Length: 86
Image 1: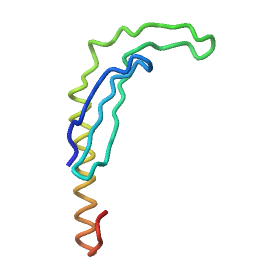
Image 2: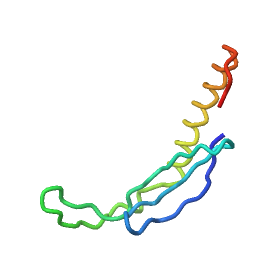
Image 3: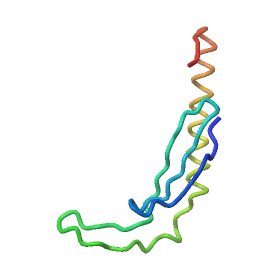
Image 4: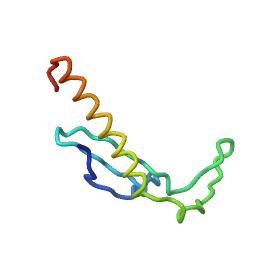
């Protein structure tokens, strides 16, 4: 099952990076933009002003639940059809 492995703020990209891993070493990254936005036409920078509304814990829980449900379904499928799991 997937669980939180590590998280950090990448100052170069402006993302809160959250890495989830399962017991097989499979990784999934969640990236929440917390840095700046810019105009696609001229590149003018606009600092974000909604950081209080972001909920990393809810994002982790939601993605974890979806990944773990999918993983359980694949294991059930493999078991039903006698398939090897890698």
